[in-house]
Amino acid sequence: MFTILIDVVITPAILAGLFSVLALSLVRKAGAETAWSGWLRVLAVTAGFMGCYLSLFGMPPLPPASSTHKLLFIPPVGALLLAVIFAVTKGRQSPASVFMFCLVFAIASVLWLTSNLLGRFEMVEWLIMLGLILALAAFAVLTCVDGRSSAAVRATAGVLAAGMGGVLILGGTASTGFLSIGVAIALGATLISTLPKDSGTAGNMIGAGALFALAPIAAQATFLTDVETYILLPMAFSVLAVPIAQKLGWTGKGTWVSTIVDSVKTAIIAGIPVAISIVLSVLAQDSGSNPYG
Image 1 (cartoon, rainbow, N blue to C red):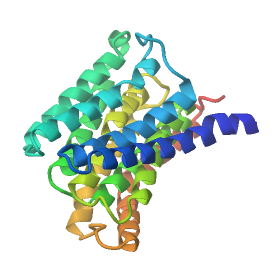
Image 2 (spheres, rainbow, N blue to C red):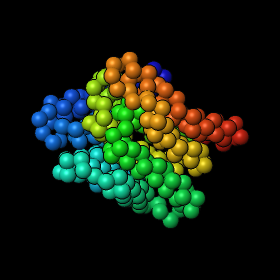
Image 3 (cartoon, rainbow, N blue to C red):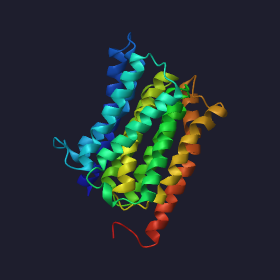
Image 4 (cartoon, rainbow, N blue to C red):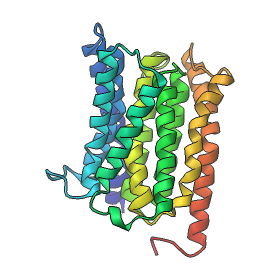
C-alpha cells in the first residue's frame, strides 16, 4: 500500500512541482533579456504536467497508440505554439485571435485524442465538451490579453485542475485524476516560487500553460471514462472567478502576503462550481454507480 502511495501520489506530485519550478527558473534565466522572457513562461506548467505524466505512465510509444499516450504531447505543442505566436508578435494579440487559436487547437487536440473512437460518442457529450472548450478559450483571453491578475489566474486554473482530478478519481480513473491534480500542484509551485513577482502578463503566461493540459484531460473525462458528462458542466463556470476577482480588486500585486490572500479568495470563488461537480460525483456513487465496486 505504501509503495502504491509513493508511486501514484507522492512521486508524481513531487515531480510536477519540481519540473515546473525548474523549467520556470531556466526560462527566466535564458530569456531575461529577450522578447521570449515572458512568453516562454507558458512552458513551466507544461513541464510539471510532463514530469507527472512520465512518473505515472512512463514514456509512451511513438507513434502514440492510445488516447493516454497522446496526452503527453498535446500540452507542450499547444504551449510552445502560443509562446511562439506571442513572442513573434510581441504580445500584440487581439482577444479574438487568442480565443480562436485556443479554440481551434483545443478542438483539434480533442479530435486527435479521440480519433479512434469518434463514432461511439453521443451528441450531449460533444456539447458538454464544446462548452468546456469554450470556457477554457475564454479563460485564455482573460489570461493572455486582458492583463488580469496572475494570482487570480493561477488560483482559478489550479482549483479547476484539482477539481477535475477529484471528479476523475471518484469516477474510477485515478491515474488521469492524479495527472490533473499534478497540474494544480505545478501551478501552486510556480506561484509560491515567484512570490510576489511575475504579476501581470508574464505571470499570466504561467497560468495559460495549464489550459493545454486541461483541455485533453477534460476530453478524457468526457468521452473515455465512466464519469457522467453532466457532472463536468458546472466546472466551466469556474473561469468567471478571474473577472470577479478583478472587479473586486483582488489583484494579488504587492507583497507576498497580499498575493496569497487574493489567491485564496479567488480560489474560493472558483471552487464553488467545482464543489458542485464534486457533490454531483459523490451523489452518483451513492446512487449505485461506484466504479471501484
